Image (tube, rainbow, N blue to C red; front, side):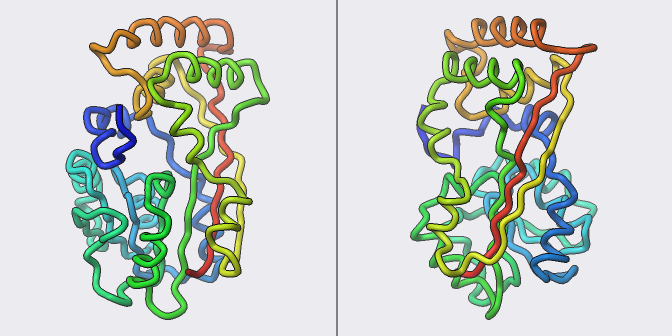
Length: 253
C-alpha cells in the first residue's frame, strides 16, 4: 500500500460516508466566536473528502468550495451536498487548488493536512487567501488510552494494519502545529468528542481507514476476528465508546 493520499481511499467511500464521525459543533462556535470568522465567509475546504467538514460549515451559513482530488470521494460529497446553494467543488490537489488569487476568507483542512506537502501548501494557502484570511487545521484525534477498549483498539491497529505505523506518525499535535504556523498561530482548541458504536459501526469505522486491509487481502479476516473479540470483551450494553480529542489550530500563513 502506498502513502499516495489521492487514491488510497478509493474503495472505502461507502464505509467512510456511513461510519466516519462528524465533528463537534463546538468547532463552528470556536471559528465564529473565538477566531472572529463571520458567517457567510467564503471557505476553501481542502481535502474535503466525502463532505463531512463541508456540511458542518454549510449548516453554519458559510459559503464552501470543496477541493478534493479523489473522484469517488468528491462525487460522494457532491451527492450529499447538492441541495446547498452555497456549495461547489473542484477536482484538485491541496498543493495546486486552481482557485484564483486572494479568493477565500478561510482555508480549512479537516483530517487531511497530514497528507499534504507542508511547504507547498503554505504557499498555496497564502496565495488563495484574501488579506487577513486565516487557515484552520483540525483533526478528530482518536484517544489511545483511557479505557480497555481504547488500549485494545490501538494494539489491534498495530498488529493488523497494513501501514498504520507510517500513517500514525504523520498526525499533528500542538508542538507540531506551533512549528508549522510559527508566529502566525493564533488559536488552539481541544474538544472531547465521544461516538458510541455498535459492532457494525466499529467494523465500518475501522475499514474506512486507509491503512486497514480490504476484502481479498490475507489480513482481512484475521482483522475482523480480532475486532469482534475486542468488541465482545469491552462493549457495554452493545456499544463501545470511540473517544476523540477534536483539535483545531487557527492562524495566518
